[in-house]
Image 1 (cartoon, rainbow, N blue to C red):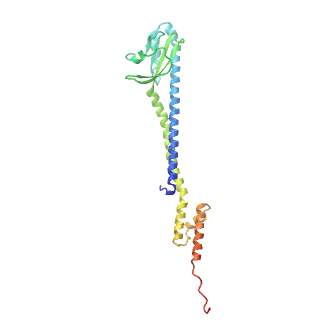
Image 2 (cartoon, helix red, strand yellow):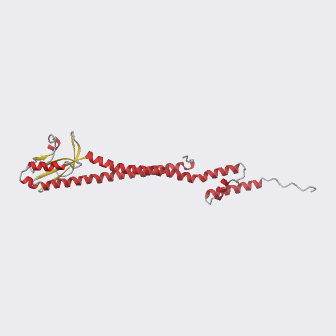
Image 3 (tube, one colour):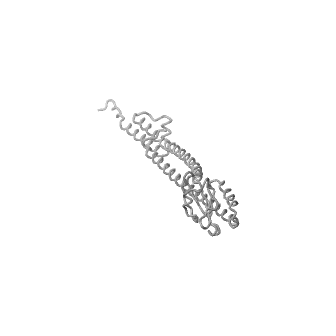
Length: 248
């Protein structure tokens, strides 16, 4: 589609406006989806940690560590949960899902901490760990690690769907703006052709000329004004009538 020079700046301005809308909408969508999904996963992990903490009270009182290990092994099958470990009130590791052993990063951490913390475990990846106390911490603490790669994949899928929709709207909007700008520029092209015909002193009697003269907008008013000026010019340039014979 060819864009007339008069409307090129307007068209580029529309492109810039659409681009700004797309970028701002995409940034807001990415931030919103990432925040909500991360909060949702963190909340689910907290609930899982609390569930394990509530279910392990009787098990810890009976010192049945095999049952405790079996309990936490079931939760690592949940998508996004990568590891679970339980520590006693004095920092002893009672049960865990690490294979073959507990990473040094975990061994050197505070066993009673419950606040969310990001961890990078060599050979395993990046995680967000949350904790839940057992009997207000007097019986120990449950720690649950969420795999950030899984969360990131979920976020990418959710954001990807939004970006596809926004991209489609961008393409449709740009093509639509080009069509509307060309539609608005078409009368100017007709007016230019009409003015060229008047400049060549050709008679504006074609259906195309009648259409531009019949318009009730600014293009039609300019066409009628040009025609009026051309007719006045032609009238002033007509030669005077010849003098009557026998006149003295």
